[in-house]
Amino acid sequence: MTALTESPSQKQIYRVALASIIGSVIEQYDFLVTGIIAATVWGGVFFKLPALAAISAAIAVYGIGIVIRPVGAYIFGNIADRVGRKDAMVYALVLMGTSTLLIGLTPSYDSIGVVAPVLLIVFRLMQGISFGAEFGTASTWVVEQAANSKRRAFWGAWVGFAIPIGLLLGFGSVLLVKSLMTPQQFTAWGWRIFFFAGFLVAIVGIVIRSRTMDSFVFERLKADSATLKSPAYQVWREMPLRILRTSLVNAMFGGAFFLSFVFGTGYMKAVGFSGTQAESIGLIAAASMLVFMIIGSLLADSINRRTVLLTSAVVFLVFAIPYFYLINTRSFFLASIAEIIGFGFVFGFGYGAIPTFYTENFPTRYRASGASAAYQISQVYGGGLIPIVAGVLLHAYGIHKAYIYIGLFVMVYAVLAILAILATPETKGVNLES
Image 1 (cartoon, rainbow, N blue to C red):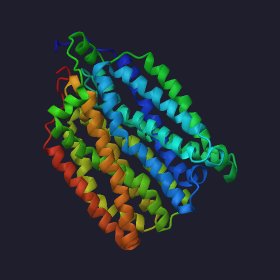
Image 2: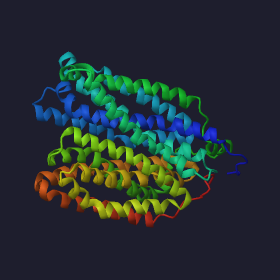
Image 3: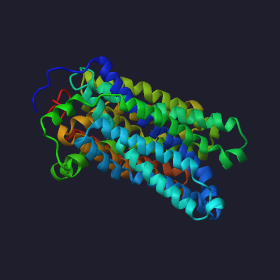
Image 4: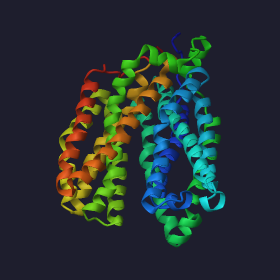
């Protein structure tokens, strides 16, 4: 590819960074809100089953949206690498907004019978496919735009900033809506408000993304007629080991996220914390995560990517068992420290480098496809599997013993991440035009 002669201005990089995080904010907002609603509302609204079976079915529908994400990574990675990063992000947000609205509009089982859960599954699949497009392509879009910036990792981390922002919006909106209505009203219709709000945010995001320029690195690739016919297939054919190796890195981070926010909140309640205390600790952790993410991104630029990632992985390895021990003390202060270190630091600090790490590990011709594939499959076997196994171990060994086995299990992910990081060459300063 011919060398680029001029770089985007700081303002142009900022506009792409802002546009790139919109969908990711909705994704994290949906993750929290839908998880709460699936566990507390959907069972009674969409399934005519005994209470426990209905809740299990609703949570399974929620999980479908995670499992299907690699399909979205493949579809939209292809679009991003053939047509453009911006176009793929606009199309993904259209699908995301549409499916989110349709979930909010889906009639109950009492209204249309068995068609209700079928529609819910279809719309959740659509939503999961759109979410599969987000992280890898959004990271590619903004990091390529900042290709010649000395703060490339910082700009890439904007995609990560969407995670605590989305979680804080989710927590805030749930608390607000619940405070304005009775539990009966919330179950009957109040839960739908979150999906209508998500749709409106998606509309704003579509407008912002449509008015933003594409990656100047990709524009040069198109000008050179160097795009591939099937980049998502080609990257699997040429770089399967790199996809799998880099996915091992994020499997640990995805596990830390789901372990803390999916399993950890319930674990704190089982130990003896009230729901309000557990949610307050979660808010503290989310706020600390944003701070550590900024610090991690700045150090990834000033030192390198691997040092930041290794630091997070080593802390996760060492702190896996003490994390649960501190929560078991039932001290609000010590549990907050556990979440700040085990989630805020481990996840936040590492994610200061993760978006740029993935983008820099794949060449331009199939960068979005490679980054998306590696990230999304890691979410399935990392973020999706860890809380399930943790729940099984908790049931088998009880509160006072399970944490040791859970800690040992997640330490395996930390070891694999460390080995994967050490096996991956440093990418700081790599030429993104290649």
